Length: 338
Image 1: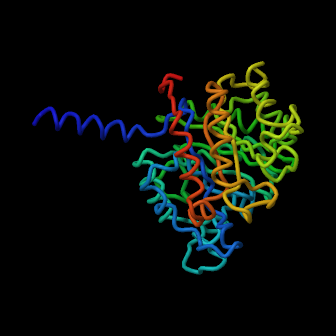
Image 2: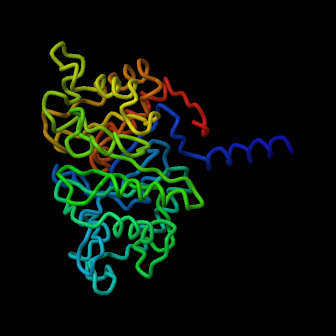
Image 3: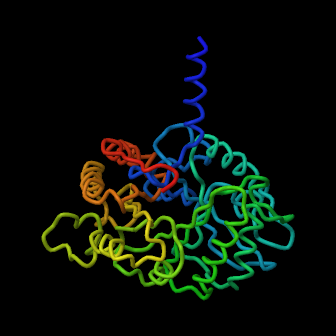
């Protein structure tokens, strides 16, 4: 009887440990923009609704899209969730347009208890990227992590890091911001991650210098909306050698990244309407692509990313679940010391 109890306790402890960056089967999904609504899919559910299954390992809250808004504070947008512009009951901190999303704070902690990490994605296609790097990095730490502020959008919930999805030139010194965040991370009591979401042409026009000069833990590479280097061209003879995963692999092998152990993720759209329709590939196609890259590049390959949660979970089969299942067949982890 005691043995059974001990095994149960150990199993529970392993479950709590959750996310392991060294694994080559991690699934990252962007949540927050409800893009499936444009495809007549059901609206995205609150964050907590996606935490009970084992499909997703990394949830990216999208987006913090204005770096310096009213009162000098950033602005969040999560579409139909915590939207003060459409719901007068959603509170906004005085003198700002920064929403107070207490329900999301509860959900963040719930997801983390399930072993998932929650990252706040900064940027997006319509972002306003004008801020002082020193001021903004301290704000992000104080508002969302272990810093101190009277304005805490998620109350006492502490996110696990920051994702940079800069799809245009930044007026902010992004390298200085990233270096500042990495220094602040070292003062915390937990593990934090800094990630980026470059487009597939290498090096990315907006994030290439960041990856080369700042420590970034994971790159969620967008193999979509870029034409000839999209997933839909995977395996074709004319897929340019210099503009696909293999070029990212070459950069990884040649230690072109500031973090030589950066993990590379293959990003996709989770539905034909989630981006440029020509970029979309079927769940089976994407599964085969992931398995091939996972097998060929076990040291650099970290997993898959998809845009976005509303498309993935509003489709049949579940796009993210299909990708996760495909990767689990060849899943390997080096352990937390990686």
